Length: 273
Image (cartoon, rainbow, N blue to C red; front, top):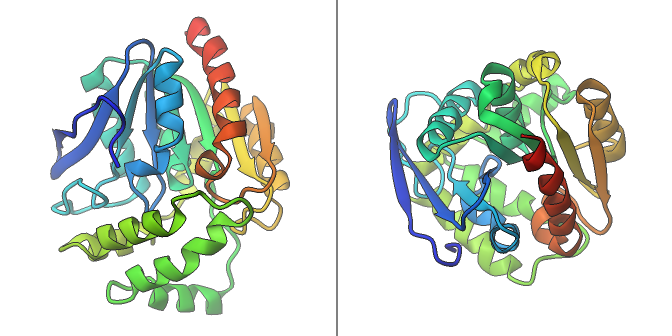
């Protein structure tokens, strides 16, 4: 699901290639999806931001979508290095929009390379590890093993879209399931899903950039979505947008609310940059 007037491009990085698209002109906005997802997660948001006067890039994480599966690492730090390379390649600084694991990656980049980052939009953000019992950890490890990861993700994905479901939900779920089952991708996604977010939490105190936290009110990945958003803003400062009728993907579930809020944030952040 390509963005309008964009072409699939690749960037060689250490260990493989990243797939990305760029459309529009103006200040750079880089959109990072979460684990198990692809750059098409931003299929509704990216065109709105392009139309608003931004150069919008969407990228696949290593081992996801059209990026290669030749990498030896799939953790947050490795993905953060990829994002740094892509911003340098495109000519930054960039406002980074990161969903789920993409938020942790964004935080690491902002902490390590502040000159590359004009602002952060953290959507359904995982920037620390959740509290999980040893039994649940064992069950999750089994469910996310390579032979089962595509089926597990397909089954769990609807719960991440509680509330208002995107019109193309079934088609998109089939698309990301097919992406995971492509040769080499299941192993890569399985390894990605075992990523530890402790490094992102440790990096929070080194982030000094404008921040917007976007959280779905129904996000099942957090015991208290609002509480998690408030905890992040207590550490980073910034603004919170709680999105009604949305769960882990408010940018695709409620683009009618999320796109204008992000565009407003960009209008002040890019001027500041």
